Length: 245
View 1 (cartoon, helix red, strand yellow):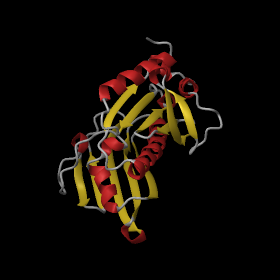
View 2 (cartoon, rainbow, N blue to C red):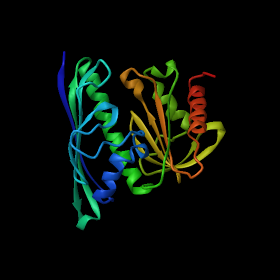
View 3 (tube, rainbow, N blue to C red):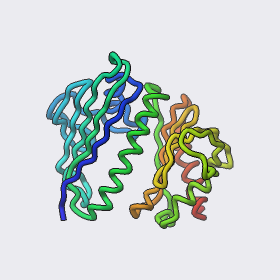
View 4 (cartoon, rainbow, N blue to C red):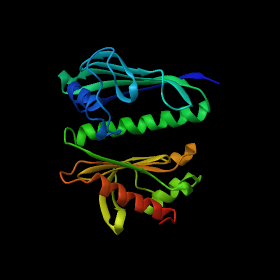
């Protein structure tokens, strides 16, 4: 049965409104995935064929689509409202994701709601530590076995994260090719883990909780970053977690 949804988040960040605007329009690869920026006008085309319905830089952006492209959702709208704080040195952001889910509503909503918190946290990490550095983005999914109920627990164990490594803790993580990565655990719950190194944000998605494979995304800000190499290395690592070659 079709049913509307609305997911709302509000937060402050140590970035100017102009820096936030740049991130959500031209810098999405730094915290989400690379997307074409919206045309700078009401009625313009935005990512995935959506339409710009509000455009007031650097304060208000709304995009909406009535043709989302997959069967569980028939409408999708994203709204960013940005206001200055502390004389414009910081920004307050209100983010609203709304639309219509057409099937499996509870599961779809729970997944979207939890992903929203993680993505917006990553946005703040990007703005605080890396913007406006250019980014090289890679993403990958685990094998079919990573859909299992305990799959994300296996990923966390493979990283070597201690049980008491809470957000903000430094950790020596077991990465691809047997390498040890010195990282800060910037996000951790039973659904997601976020690691921040000197040059990258590496994000681990426990999408098995919603019936999908576990995923990884790498936002690499090193000048010599190689997307294909990052994808291949982490894919091999993730396949190894589940005994795949």
